[in-house]
Length: 560
Image (cartoon, rainbow, N blue to C red; front, side):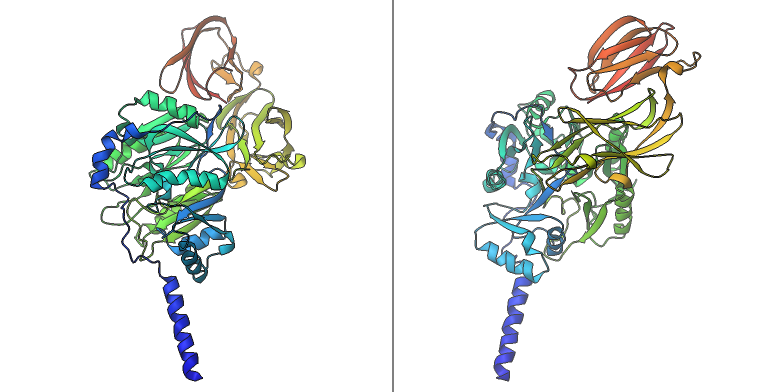
């Protein structure tokens, strides 16, 4: 009897040990880098692009840091199983498996590894690799307030199952798919949810039949992109994916890698960081540029290749001396988020530029509670009343909870107070803050709940990192007549904004878009102008105003 018991224990041990292996008996067929055959095919691969009718306008491309309902990975894994476990206790995990029998192998492995398999679904979808970021879905909200997916021709010609996988993914999710006639890859695409996207110039190289302006036109139709930043790749020696060295952390925050001054790529890294530092965000302010030391090459430091999933950030670590500093950078840049360090495993090591972002893909919450707001930031010249306006849409179709649709605010670091938002029209809500005084420091955030049980804030993390502005002056008509300053309000604006000179008549106004193109000019002889902006594309515009004294003023206008 004892002998049989010992044998049983041995069998159990072998089964568990086998289950805990990641089953890399067969070397992966592909690497992240294109094969030599793929490199030969890429110069003409644009001839294989497909297209469909674009989504109903207006289109909003969703950012990684907006509300998500799950994450997609592939099996065999390209990530440590402890990351699967972390994700499974936070959200739904959709695992691509093929053939179907792999789901049994994967489930046993997950069970033995502490994964919450109640939150795991296995999608039997053929695929060639585990780089779900590169061939995965780009989520949008169309003009009918429906979440959909924009597809593209994947820039890996020898991986047809990867390229075709998205059709099966959208079928599983029950949403629409739109085919955009561009060769692209998800690792070379980041977007802010407000019409700005960024890629390296690889997107231009792989679409030689398209100009930069025509790619912008296509991405505007399919993704709602109004500003496409084409950037030089500072790495210079890899696959030219933007997520290898940079990442949008929010609409006005970006993380860029940093290398030592002795590195030949140092000037290229600094150039791309300066590009963001000097650019205007859709909110009208300058980007907050955060740097994370990532010397790479001889030390594995893939810190920008992280995954943002709702209020968590999963950061890849490889045991280098700079790991703790990287975590500190994320904590400083993203207060209120839970920063989760993920160490590489023996079977799924990180590379300098290829880690957990490349091998995972967030999945949109198709019934999300969507908030879009152009915040008051920086120094603000305000009229006597300060209006906070926002767009709130419950894509689930559920009603908003009226007593939980609020603006929380505090003045001069006082106690947080709340004030209800009132419905105006067409998903627009607004409220008026209490009377403010010059030099007041104001923090605020928006909270909304709906009957489906969803809640959302803007900014996403709410009170830990609220919107902040300083009141420069209040009550335009009460300005001292000796003060010479052009004032623009409301700003951001929807249909019209007012340009006022406190002392002299305005004589000319010129407005330029973010590309420097003149879109408006006119001559005047009055001190207050009502400028109609209703037909302008949402975004940031630069305005040049000349007054009767010959002085020139530069102001920005944010069109919602």
